[in-house]
Image (cartoon, rainbow, N blue to C red; front, side, top):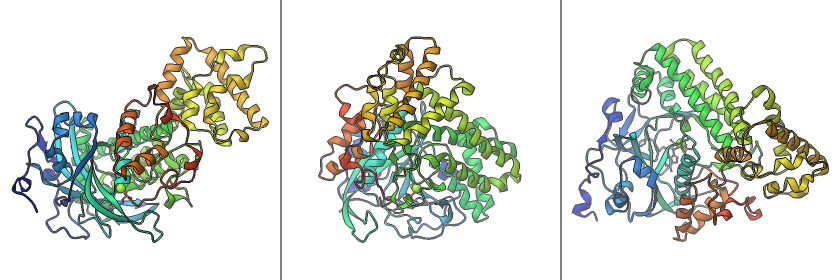
Length: 542
Ligand code: AMP
Ligand code: MG
């Protein structure tokens, strides 16, 4: 039963300014019914979150709250839980779900839309700008198709922790404000094998300047709703790309080129930290070049470019680590097609898509040079060193994170000695090798040759060794959200113990620091996790 106090809307603390630019400026679905359907002629449908039985706060991100001007005491209040579980509306907000489409696994999938995400509205902060608040798992919307609109605790923990981990790693991403248990159960058949199970339900509040996706434009283009396409493009440019100038053909071209550039930057970061998104459909590509929609993602353990965490993708490996740049480019081409009616010229769009590749290649090399501490980076002389390493790493199972982090610990001056003991020299790398027996003499010969070249290259650069090490440590995290760690936190949380969720949230706040006492979290994947579901295999069921 709803009590009177619960039925009222709440207000945010007075210093927080709520606005609704998206709904004020874009066409609304005139049908107010929350029924599943094709929504045409509109960018969004108004829909309220479904009330839940017993919401309870599991965790919130201090840093994300700060962006919104929310104090710790507000985040710990009952009001906070009511608002961010979707149980009570906030004054001046009019919640809505967005209409979008997308290419899924290479094929046009038609209308998708916010099937379980409900946007509350925007907070405009004088210091940090504009943030859309979005509840994920807040109940069905007109875009829910055949699904329930809900989210389970395990996938919500993964989204919450990874959003914040990525932010602290310096990777462009949407953020997560809160993780709230709903007190209700949700049925999921995790491996689509006829074994459904009841799981705890949860709601994550995500925040981002915008949740508009490539697919937000594709849907209007596919339906030939060119008026809506233009309205959404103009709105996006005016709100999120104002530096490009007033919308018009030239601005659309510059805009597309900027999207190509920011997307390239994002992918370079993914390749730097070993992140595999797992489901890079065009509906999961942010127009702002932010990592969005943390589903069956994973972190590269052994450096295997063909690794995909997504079981649905296991056969074709479309979304594996090494394919991510190519897929991003393919997705940009789909966006380019969608924007064509605004520009009516193929050439500048093609140029943008081509520029993605050149920008990506250039940035990837300088990113790799940072990981190796090469400074200044000389592409003509250093590229070979980078390529050789990328060929060596997958030959034996090598933990990517540990390899790069520990590479800086090697005392390269020892190589100068006559007959250096290469094994002793490379000892800091030994924790990175999963199967030492794979290190055949032939492999070690190639590896030592590379290490020699690397040492020679490092000797050429001036400046103290410690400076190179510090530089490397800023590009090579010590702590990432290893797949098995997230899974351990989930298993504990499912028994009601949320301590590890909070510990990991704390850990990922300083991924580049040594964090004495927490080394256990930097260890390579234990053998038991090699093939365990949730650790190395993830499904889209969430
Ligand atoms: P995803 O694979 O998570 O990117 O989702 C693809 C589409 O399915 C999006 O339109 C989602 O909103 C929708 N979707 C995913 N899970 C659910 C769910 N449990 N209920 C409703 N819609 C969902
Ligand atoms: Mg999605």
